[in-house]
Length: 297
Image (tube, rainbow, N blue to C red; front, side):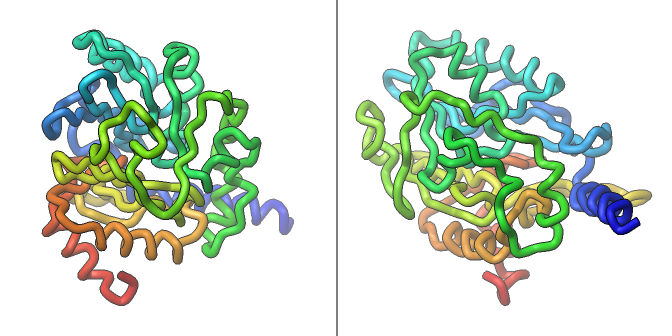
């Protein structure tokens, strides 16, 4: 009886953590759109739980440099996401003679890295970059279910997180080390000052966000979200800056500290979450979110 109730509670809370994340407020783009100069976003949809009402936007980014394309995250491996995404990726890359040379992961959850094995097979000259704290989950064989957390939501919900393919080639892995730095210090062909990374743990141990300096933009990963929310039998709200999904966030206290790190980066004009129903989060909206949580931020 105890086991039965534990299973039922796990299912309930796993679903409850997503019940306020409903259908996209706008249709998925199914193409890469230039949201800032030389910065393109593909915004597809992925169902974290098997329900049409739980489809969530998941973004992948392309950055154009003089001799190459750089991709941030690799998207989800589910058919409803992968088929239009792969078509859009090939179409976008075909508009230039420059090759895709690097995939940088904000973190390794299935919606961000699910298609990384495919990309490495399809593009044999591509390397992938990941923070040193995320390496065990990308190439080290460790699963996120093995993590200890500081919330009951993660303790129950982690068992419903899909297992990741961690047998990727270490020879093609670039490890980003430390709390922050210029990605070009680890990638010799990348222009200096193009992108910096900042370690932002909590949602996962090695999550990072990227600052695209020329456009004063941040690709935030899951440090924040910008979702339209809806509870059963209610109208959907407008997109609003908010915390990441609770179920896969193993250390809520670390995640709040990472939001303070994000708030401390100066000179930013737009924050682009990976789960975004809109065209990014303005500085004013992010400050309002931070201000509403002043006791934590």
